[in-house]
Image (tube, rainbow, N blue to C red; front, side, top):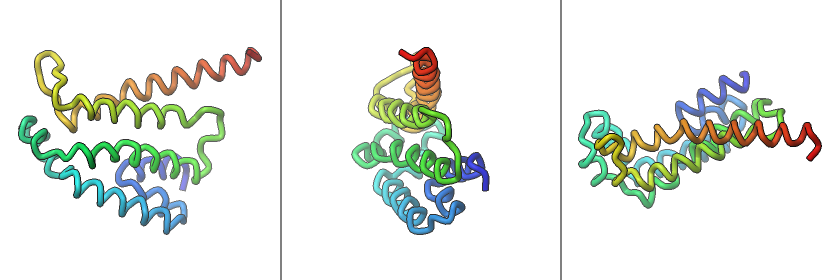
Length: 153
């Protein structure tokens, strides 16, 4: 398996990348944690309601205390599978993963109140949209740190 393959399988379900890397116990732990958080947060029901456009109902069904664990678990699992498969040899490669976890968590915090162009986005769509600035900030910071390292300051 290549690092990118394991990364994409981890996007599908946390723990799959670890299983592909031969890290069976770690993979099972990630899968167990994903299912635990998913069930406790009512996340599948929230996803279905969000896809049907019933954002207010999705917000009411969301257990935010549990769902707050999901972004860090998700992005950590992706980073871990990618690294274990041999990816991430360049310095600061972890920053986009870290900032995605942070921005998605912040997106989740404001998901029940923040409107974009007068539309309530909700606990699925706003966190998903928050990946974009997370990746951007992570890559920008990575580039700045690499540039600074090359200049020797």
